Length: 333
Image 1 (spheres, rainbow, N blue to C red):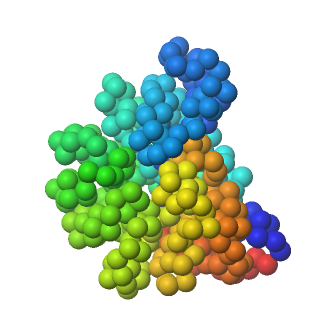
Image 2 (spheres, one colour):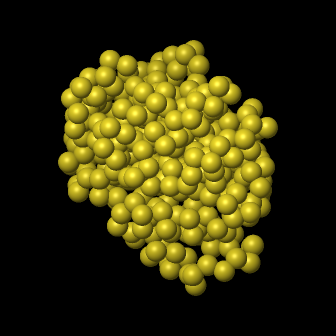
């Protein structure tokens, strides 16, 4: 079986995807027209051209502009269902989806509108296609601690729909320590914790995510390799890193995929996983990340199997479910 055939056939979990980052130009244009929202693009090609950005901030600018067309529960449902359809195509059988409520509540959209649309699409996908999912609410780190506390309070009535909290948006200048008290309160309420750290920010941010936020996973974490003691700690803890190769390439974290450290970290025993991050903007969903990474780093079939197993190992599903997926991966030849 070729690499590409194996990648297409193996079941996998996705643990680092922002639902707002799955917004394809066609759907954005359709919802903008449906909601009669003016956007600075006359057609789908104009939107696609705007997706050609060069760093994290220029990406975030278009990301937030696109999110502005999302107003109603139906919009969040359509956005989420479109992503889950891509999961079905890529054989992603389980996904843990980030959503950014502040992106929407800051412009007057009710928290309830956001969560109910996303959750309904997830429940439909489970029933129709057998795709399981969990939702993780992220705090925007460029906003204040006060705003994060308000968002946590808004989330409490919907705790049954949200498994954990995360931390995303502009990393540099907004260390995890800024949100230590918010995460402590979230954990008191029973939320799991994850955080973006060590993408553009230094290894120190990874230490803070571990020690201050008490995270169960590090999102990105690729700069951890700059600190040998940190790397050994990640290995000893089997602390998952949700790595996003095409995102790292598009945002110039690496200059070429052949320079990416994912394979090196895998070989050292780090629990690394492959994810798409913001696939509409970064050039590919999960399988495309696998395909391009396999070619650039000359991954073996065993490496690919290990990365798929890691995706379930690092997930928040039960141990029994994990074991079932490991067996399924071993059966495929």
